[in-house]
Length: 474
Image (cartoon, rainbow, N blue to C red; front, side, top):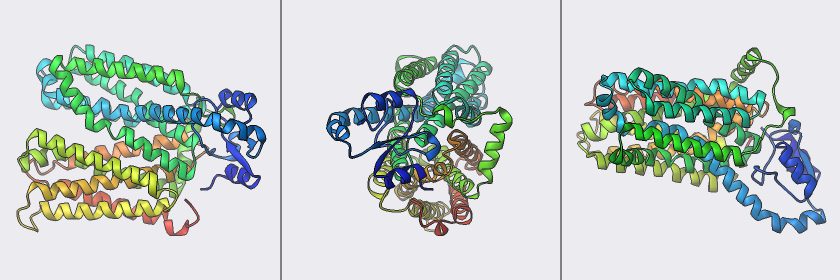
């Protein structure tokens, strides 16, 4: 959905600059050559003409004189904002995966059944899903900065209380609170990207965020294992508390408000619910939301089943499993960067998304044929290759679904981000237990879930988004 404000500015021969509050106003007043305010990366395309954006003549002498001196500062600001948003999106996988190596120790230390300790993971995941539904609309009403800072402060307190939990019941409760608060980082990071970018630039930025946040699942279990070598399971939460403190300070210091007052929503819970209802009534938005959620379910099925598939069925060591998991994550990151650097702007996002979905479906079908014995007894490496292709193709899907959905909702980026995140977590949570429905000695359920989700994702993409009717879009 093209940005009307950007189009108008382009037609007038002007640069289009988003209003991000007092920082941008002060920057424009002090130097008309400034192309981005404090905390706003450049180049930036505003979300819509109603954003209260300012236009500065591109050909002015002052702009030409200051362009050289100002470009370095813009690049530094862009990098800083990218790192901050990347850290916020990496916090959930850190909170989940760093804790995984400590589960057996928690079971022994708190003298609780393994099934009860597993609820600490479920509680955190549920909190992250539900928290986004609250924080997203709240950020549309109050702005991005205040709900994010409150969420980060609550995250720090909840994580510290996890470290002090005297029993498993209290640990489950504090993990739920940790997930609810940590959801602020996920949902507001996406909304901030929508505030600052549009179209192709937004897709590129999401691909860059994937580079940062994609490293977290790779290093989190390693960090957790190393922490357990020098302390007990409580030390993992102390480390996460420190990470939360650092992120909170960085957000407070450098991430400025990106949603000016004139673009904020009014009203209470009823207005928020009406906004979400309106978003869900948008057939195309809902199509991208469900497509992304089902693709995430394919990914979640892999994450849930791969430890048993690789180690129990194919007899690989934990070290081999860690290596394969890391290689697959690197594949996702590399393809995401190829998408952001080479494909975006040259190939339509819908075409990239369609190719990604097709590759995932082919890889899932191949995994189903291999695990069901159609090709006879298949060793680990062909299965590992199929999982690598499937994981890597996610680098084409996830940035595209987020971008296409958020491009339709500049008026309610927080609520839209909440729906995108919650749907992904909920669909993933439903798909996750299905992979073990036939026990730990077969990988067929994993492949069946992946094929089913891939088929549904492709069908919804074609049936709801109807990309052939929107050839003029990015």
